[in-house]
Length: 133
Ligand code: ZN
Image 1 (tube, rainbow, N blue to C red):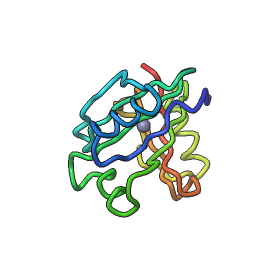
Image 2 (cartoon, rainbow, N blue to C red; image 1 turned 180 degrees about the horizontal axis):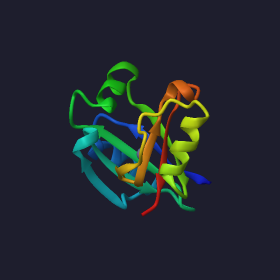
Image 3 (cartoon, rainbow, N blue to C red; image 1 turned 180 degrees about the vertical axis):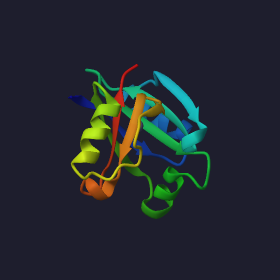
Image 4 (cartoon, helix red, strand yellow; image 1 turned 120 degrees about the vertical axis):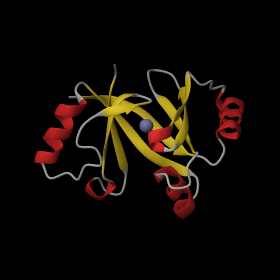
């Protein structure tokens, strides 16, 4: 079951600089800053009111998906995250509907247990599903 749009993620070249900008513009302060080596990123979550967040992603590995994204498209919206009750169940249901998955099963992520759908199946937008833990 889908609950809400949890966060919108933005790929940035420099996380510290982006955090300063979002603080200056919106008064936003990160609730979490973490390095996620498996995804090759340093990430920060900025609460934006009413349970919505902006996630800023800086690549720390030139081979990471986020690094390649910035290389080809520049900084910008990287993915949209939808909160779900059960990430594994949603991935199974979506796979049965023919959706191409990046993750067949949920795995640990900044927003909880997460799984990604391939943008080829979702009109060019990378979609993350997240189950709060
Ligand atoms: Zn995310």
